[in-house]
Amino acid sequence: MHRTHTCGELTLADLGKTVTLSGWVQKSRDLGGMTFIDVRDRYGITQLTFNADDDASLRASARELGREYVIKVTGEVIERSNKNAKISTGDIEIKVSNLEILNAAKLPPFTIEDETDGGDDIRMKFRYLDLRRNPVRENLILRHKTSQEVRRYLDSQNFLEVETPYLIKSTPEGARDFVVPSRMNPGEFYALPQSPQTFKQLLMVSGFDRYFQIVKCFRDEDLRADRQPEFTQIDCEMSFVEQEDVLNIFEGLAKHIFKTIKGIDLGTVPRMTYADAMRLYGSDKPDIRFGMQFVELNDVAKGKGFPVFDAAELVVGINAENCAHYTRKQLDALTDFIKRPQIGATGLVYARVNEDGSVKSSVDKFFTPEQLSAIAEAFHAKPGDLLLIMAGGTDKVRKQLNELRLEVASQLGSATKKPLLHYGLLIFHYWNGTKKVAVSMPCIIHSHLQNRKTSHF
Figure 1 (cartoon, rainbow, N blue to C red):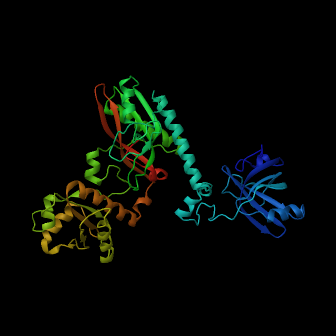
Figure 2 (figure 1 turned 90 degrees about the vertical axis):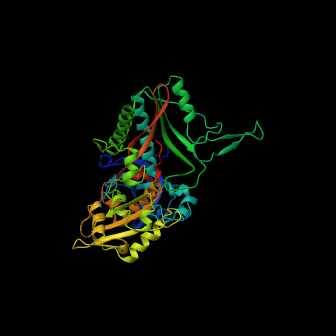
Figure 3 (figure 1 turned 30 degrees about the vertical axis):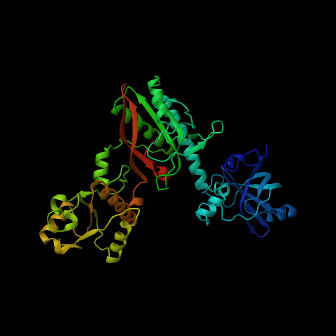
């Protein structure tokens, strides 16, 4: 072994021991006749000391070390005079008696720090260097621990993990298949699975009443914030159960994961139907860390002579509380935001509730003050609030308003002022003995996982 200990485990209990560590040079500091080196591995950081009075040649060698050199050192564990409470080994340091360079390194193209100076492109080009950074490593560790706890919990619920084939016939599920040419059958192709749907139904028919798999899925579709060509989902199927059984089991899974991994007790998990999610938030994975629920305005906004509202299937809006101070420039920017091709809205109507209770709108000429007050009342608006209203086809305008809601919340900082948990809806399937039934349930997503969220679990 090239080490007796890792760089994250030595404490005051190890004082006086002679140890060997191996790792990467994080940084070095020259202070008079002393040189200090931070050596790093996946477990942590340990400080090394080189004293010119003890061994001038060894200290000279230490001064030649560059960032990311791979080294092996042997020395005595001593107590630090300047302790560092930010790291687990901050009470000790190693007085080095032997230094061996296992591998020299060129200067990295970006700093291997939590807050790096490397952009996305260069970090992806040198991914092996990016993986050395704490945030990336911690995410991989979190993913590993989550997978282990998912297996442990589902095993306790009598689920069987079954590995299904990757080379299959085409079973389209809304996206294009990735295809793989067959060497033994020229001109024919395999498809990579968009999900294991066919195989898990076969398992249910065969009597395997509870199945799960942490499975890689492939969909040849354009990149979006919650879509990527390959992704991993926790795929489940159940037989002889009802909706309540499914909800209870997977609420239990969410609670188990958060309790064992993050130490968070979720308590009672709120439930929301798909219909309510779309009606109130315009999304099947709504962020409910802040308000701004949708308010439907057909009864108070249509039939007043404003053609845009009168011709629309749905007039709907949100109340951005205490935002009446928004300038015309800010409102124009919001209008431009929803007119982007990715959203596709045609316009935005706004109304300010003044301090005296009167309402000033961008469409004043089509509405009387009383009619505008009725619209504000539908929002339960108070002085200082800003009402943002859109109109169009029911499904389309709800999705567009959802994008506007998230943008306004982002500008206000609402998405970070509350605990970094948000809820979404996940789709589950179970076999009731005669047919497959789909149900939705709430999902609690931690901020670390938000970039990986999909509509499947």
